[in-house]
Image 1 (tube, one colour):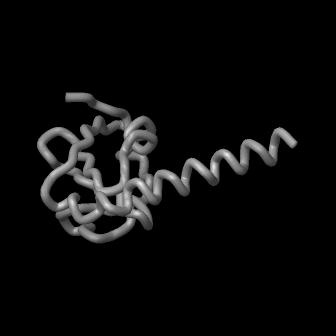
Image 2 (tube, rainbow, N blue to C red):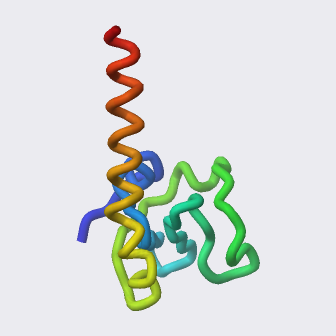
Length: 93
């Protein structure tokens, strides 16, 4: 099992994947429109980066609830890659 700090988790999580802290005390899902809480009082709310999140360790995984997002994953990742390449080319020019 791979563990990530918050910053590393954000760079590694893919559309439809979930990330949880040990014991599943905090769980998020990356959807095409952002990172959202799963479960608890903040369920369905967009994640706001707060101080306490910076000290958590996370593991990333897929489960049966995330399957609905898999069809978007390739399209979104291709679009993200194109946007980064376009910005890079603009800066080089």
